[in-house]
Length: 374
Image 1 (cartoon, rainbow, N blue to C red):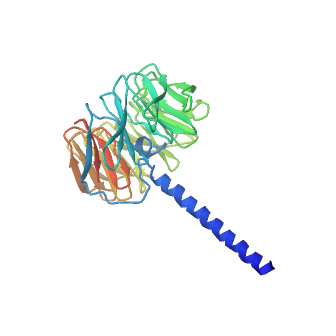
Image 2: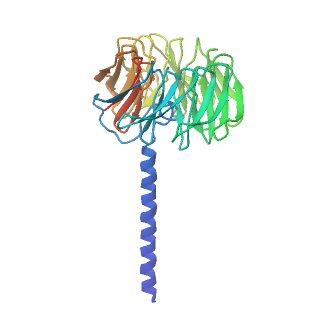
Image 3: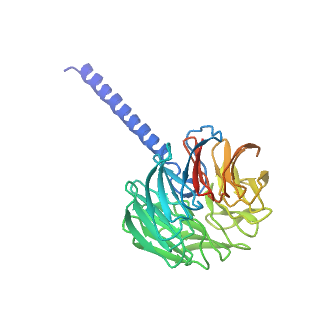
């Protein structure tokens, strides 16, 4: 074999190896794109932004799934399956395309918050003080962790650790494989907030009027920031943590120092988690309004009025913001102008937060149903 032949073969193998590597990369990318909303508000940072390929959602019903009681829980979506709780005490796994039930897991109390999903597990809490982990394929229980009060917090999982708050005033870090406690942090009040992280710090709000920043590895407090009333779920983006409070303010803090960057005064209590997208922060108020404010200055860009309270946390893609309201509707709003694109009416109030995935929006309603809208 001469030198030229060897060179050609080497080049051929190099090209094949590169193509194989590219194919694997694209495959991994496709798998990732199937799973962009696997926890509350889309990701452990709670940003509520769908970063996948943009598909125009037109506001048409694809399917609805009926449970036996109100649906306050917010859906998550993982590899073509929707996971959502109900006040009928069940967690449901539903095919995202057909609306057909795959399995359900019954607990001893209502499930009002979101689950979090991995390749192996679905983890969630209920109002019976319990945190459950069930097998993602079968819906069979893997473990249960008991706290001292209701779970009104949605978990996230990072590096096989579950982070979740409880009404017993503790934030828990639990091994997702074993269900064993890694650490817990005692706050000054009930934790109804869903925690968020930048990968190093866990942020959560509390009924003692503080936002807390806790070291993700050992549960040691880094700092805390006092507001004028209860603090709700934060979102983390661009070196800042954003959150609302019953004192009517939306706050932006530096994640490292806890120093206030800006605050925005709304018309009423801010009970939802902000969404962050396209250089704006979006949050709903008890006074019926959805606000869009500049991420850097806190200056209002636009506001959109519904006909009742907003406790639903908004979600966004590059074109629209979606939010539920006590007026029974899910609203789709132009992300840049605040103009209504469409609204879809259910038969009950909506406190569930929308999940955006593959050209569809999933949401629960107090009419007992989970909806898929395309």
